[in-house]
Image 1 (cartoon, rainbow over the protein chains, first blue to last red):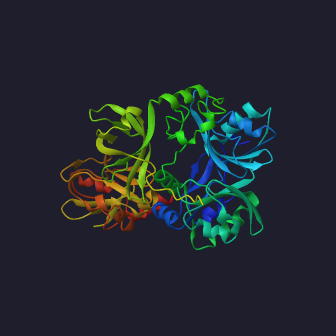
Image 2 (spheres, rainbow over the protein chains, first blue to last red; image 1 turned 60 degrees about the vertical axis):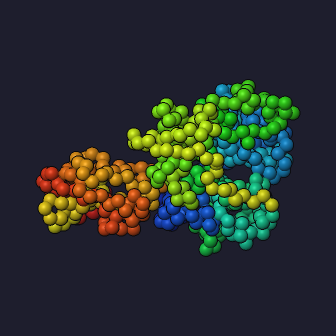
Image 3 (cartoon, rainbow over the protein chains, first blue to last red; image 1 turned 90 degrees about the vertical axis):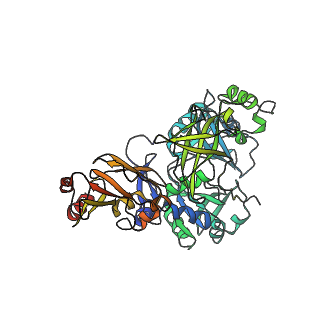
Length: 374
Length: 123
């Protein structure tokens, strides 16, 4: 369905071009990387007011059938069976080797039906993975007629509740079906910026109207993929292909918080997902590597791929994501380090263009999350 | 004296005595987006046409500044180290990068004039 090399566009494509966006190919789609405002101002606009993101390139799927919840549980190390109605949970598709093939959001829509949002670059392989393992027990649909908007920032709730007052009572990681000016929307209070905000799933044909309603509010600006990345980096959120990949387990990617208790050793439904023996062992005994935050000294960004060395010049890890944090106004990085160094007080260095930059290990996130928990 | 342009989107402003001021064009700074860091060479360094002399970092990526001429670097705009946004605000003026004493002034003839550069970036 998504095969072929032809570049795809989202239902907002014309709006982006009209808004003066710089369009780039991303995961098979032509997407806005920035608008005339520029990445730094788009970033701070989202932190201070409300940013509107087109994330329609992401995969939206529905898994349904009597066994949908237990079926999905067999592919993720997360409690899905007890996921309450209209609640959303972060999950990971694991591999036989305990690696991560994608991360995703799962919402329980009720009536044995789950709504999944997966990464754009992984949606075909995720769909095949689900089909391969679950098609005998559930029905699976990959929507190609849905758009996805994210409205993020401290003013997001005000903007959205002007049209749908009931969203005000929603807490972080809950979902609601609402009407916004006669447009049917599935709203989750979630996002990828560390700010309060919403993701809104809407039919492709209503997409432009919905975006226009949001943009009519002075608090709202289009925000591109460039600022989306700097926002998630400051929020310390993992990006597939950077902090997450098939060669590293969720434990090695410091995502223990996402591994539900009932699926751990001694839990009511322990294991029984791909790679469970490896992941459960690492949860008990630790892993060889971990993902941590790094603050480089000075102003030079330390980007993905930069080698991290100990005081004696031995390689002990590498940067998985790095750049500049506009809110902190300094460079920030996330790195994968050998576990024995993640608590060490010894001096560490990043190599950038053969220069040694001193780096300090810090707790993630770099910028405090502002989720609304009620 | 007039300003010349390179295919790598630098401007070269020829002053007297074989001295040139070098910066990046407005087109280049627009393409790069918000700059967050500029790594400059040191005064006294030699530069050779076609070789990397500086690194310009935007929020998204790092790009090389390639020497448009050869010579010795006599001054660098060290203000850029703390305020890279000057390049975004005034790339053709206050946002200059380096001053070079040319070792081969004939290299200037290989650069484009404004008209040629404008049609070059329209392609």
